[in-house]
Image (tube, rainbow, N blue to C red):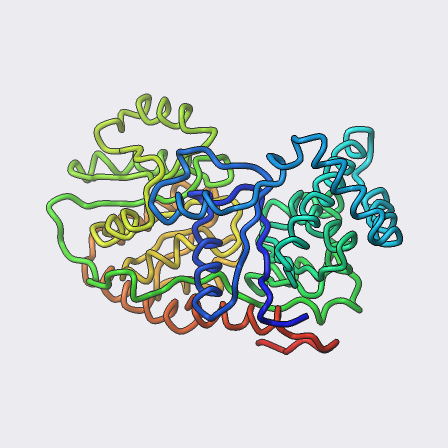
Length: 413
């Protein structure tokens, strides 16, 4: 297929406020002259349309379930796929059945994914798409895999973790790696987990492609003494992010830093419980729940903060940390997943054991008490992300992998 034809991106919900890195990657590919069609299984709610860019992306994205709700269209897509290439159609159905999770529920979901795959395949054919790329290797990647089989369009996916590695057999990482043209792993840690759950003959498909940022979009003013020390958390308000541990640390810290200010940017299923816990700990005057914010507003908040703290129990390589480091902020995070590939402990920030409120409190004290330390760490962090996590560079690597038509994929790192 010609590289002048468009490629397509598939995610579960696009655009989503918590997945701005996907939007930035798409924009970076477009900047390199690649036409990218955006596809999403479900429509996002208005709370995710936090800026004009998100609203524009929402308007031009193809939504699979919305299209499949028309019985005539659903049946028509399947009949078209069956008549056009019966071998591919039944091969895709067979793949769906072979890779289904155990139980009746698993079978039903897999048949839903197969039904969605034919609808997506029809859309890709209409748009003359040459390659399908997926982010997040769970249910949407199953749809991408089945779409590839039924349409003959090659697919690839970016795998992040940590959630997919909790249930690798359920999500059949092995089959997805086998079927894909290549797999973009966001870190060496992520790549190693893929190696655990796949056949060694497919390890050469596992390529390191970092999520990235555009450093020049973030102000690098260093840190200085402010009238009120300001800590920032950015992330989904869900159990994996460890916010209760942060609140426990803040309850110990606040009596000694009476003018402390903490902003939690993000939303999620545990917001109500966390707000109640904040009140119970006497932190209501300290902690502000800001909800989702636009990318530009997040950048403004980063330029005004002193430290970004991320007390997660499990992570990939958080883009939130990259954004903070590009802004010249020191970061305080946990030693989980691929974070240590981004943050060097004691150099660009501090890493503490997950779930350890004592260590988190101690490092917060260290950072808040030393403006020179914060400034040095901020400078080191910005240099790190500029050199190794630049969106333009990473998008070029991804584009090269997508555009490669030979059997041998380029060895990117």
